[in-house]
Image 1: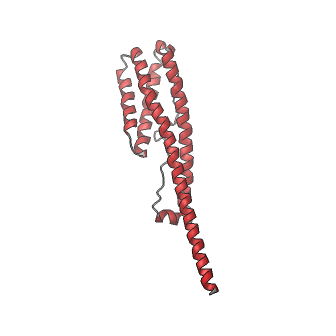
Image 2: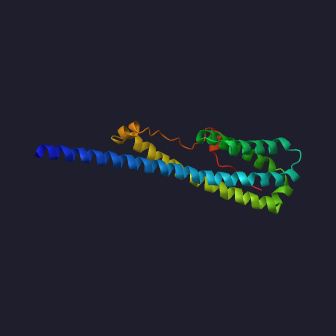
Image 3: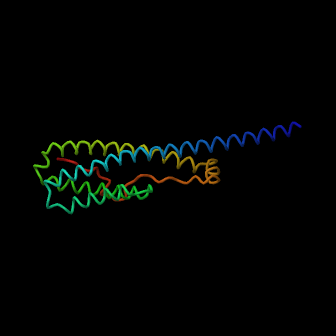
Length: 184
């Protein structure tokens, strides 16, 4: 009889451990998904600022149509992206085209002095900083989650319940690893 109680106790303990590990993995997955949502909020703000930036620059940079169109096209690609992988790629392209716009804008002194452009530049800089912090937080959460699903015994539970590794938000192009210079 005593052996039966011990076996039952061990089974209950194992079940409780499995439930605890599963719940921890779910909480970690929700945390990194929430972190991605925070990035998404800042990217939306960035996407909303870009048309105003382009419209303001348009008046001064009429013969730079290609640059303005590439920024608009990159923004639309970023807005239309649905998966995290597509968003990462589209945001990398958008960052690059914004960098080009800012570099070209340097050649227009009147544009650099325009109050609307200065305000938009400040908002864009603030947004870029928030995006940077949100990316860092997301990557921290992804790192914790990915580690949790790979360590033993969590890896057994993760495999049984189809917990998949999450992708880090990283820049693929070495040139994009540099901070964008936004000066007017």
